[in-house]
Every structure is written in structure tokens, then in C-alpha cells.
Length: 242
Image 1 (cartoon, one colour):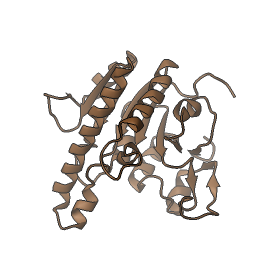
Image 2: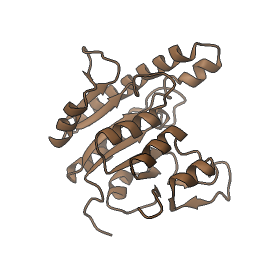
Image 3: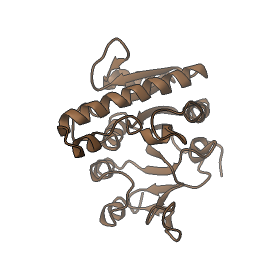
Image 4: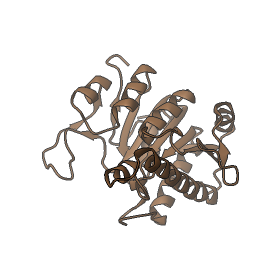
């Protein structure tokens, strides 16, 4: 394996649940700090990094709609939760000397920048980590789709998804002991087998833009940096000849 990064510019998608640690709700500071340290190591490698963080540790729009709330209204609440997580990650990164900018799809000038594609690109070129908040700014779209959209807009070389397990499995390995782990999959494999990686919109958008998806365990210490070097355990989702 080489120590040279596999990609020059990437977007890391982290679920809100990944920030909970062992808590049942909210943010676990140790977990946020550990992820921030890993991101800092990748930035130190010379990689241009952006982030999309979900909001499921605070509020999920789908869950709100299921309990009788208007779906669009619930989704907007979920978007605001992602802003809270983005600000927490910004604080953790900047304590490590990593310059960051938060850009929100829902304008809120008092706390962060509005999402402007060209400005985000300039930030990344200058070595700043850009954290994209509030999803796409539209209800009925998940943060997975937002991550695929922003990665395409930023012309990223890959979309990395940090999960609770070390790749894509045929079933949840935490519940199914003999679940099969995949090294490589195609986008159509994920869609046809209904593998629970990202929603169909995100997979389709990535396929259209020939954007490789790399799935790995965000909680393994140094995993993000290892994946960038092509080391460790992860699953790649690409076209057959990509």
C-alpha cells in the first residue's frame, strides 16, 4: 500500500447517529472529537475535505412524519438538527487548528454562510474543511442525497460514507452473524439487492456522475486516513470498469 492519498478531493458523509457514541440521543463529545481528529489527519495529508452530517441523533423527519407531523415541516426540523451537528463539528475541528466553514442550504447569516458553490470550492482550494448543513434545503430529500449532490457539485473524486460497520454487508452484521461482506459492488448491485447503504436517489446520482462511493467504519481510530491511503477494511461502489 502507498502512503499517497488515493483521492485529492473528497466528501465525507457522517450520520447523525454516528455522533451519539454510546448515548441514546444528542452528541457525545469524545466521539465528535475522535472524528474531528481523523478528519484533521486527512487534511494534513493534503486532501481537500468537505463534510455532510446527518441530524438523526437529534431529530429525524421521517420519524416525525410517522408520528403524525406534516412531512415537510418535520424534514425542515431535521435540517435544522444538521446545522447543530455541523457547528459542533466545526468547533471540534477548529480546536485542532483545522480551518473550517459551515455552509447552510437554509440561510442563517448569524451562525454560518449560505451555500454558494463557487465560494465552497475556493474554501476547499485554500485547505479549509467545508461542512455542508441543512441537507439540500428541500424536504423529502435525505442527507445521503445531499451528500451525493454536494460531492458532484464540488467535483469530488469520491464520496466516503462513515458508518457503524466496516463496509457493506448483505445484512446487518450486528444482527445477522453470517452476513456476507462485499469488497466491491456496482451501483446497480446496491439498487437491485436493496442493500441498505444509501437511498436510491443518492446511489443514482452518484452513478450518473461516476462518483465512487467508499463505505467504512467511522468509529475505527484512524479509519478515514487509512481509507485515503487505500488501507484497512472498506467497500467500494463503482461502475464495473471504474
